[in-house]
Image (cartoon, rainbow, N blue to C red; front, side, top):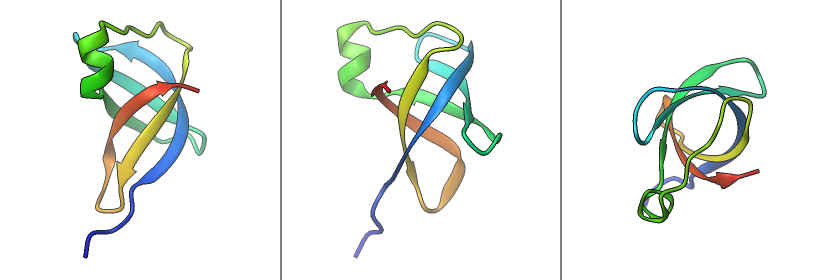
Length: 70
């Protein structure tokens, strides 16, 4: 049985690539966020300071999937 994903919000600090961003969580931790397939296909981009909705697994708190704007 798989663990449920954790959803949280964060703030984009900088863009690292076409789909990669450094994102600061509400607790101050900085993670590497990548755009979800849906956002990638839509050509979505976020600017520095943008609030985003993130999905993380309970096993890796250094990476997150960006689901959209918060």
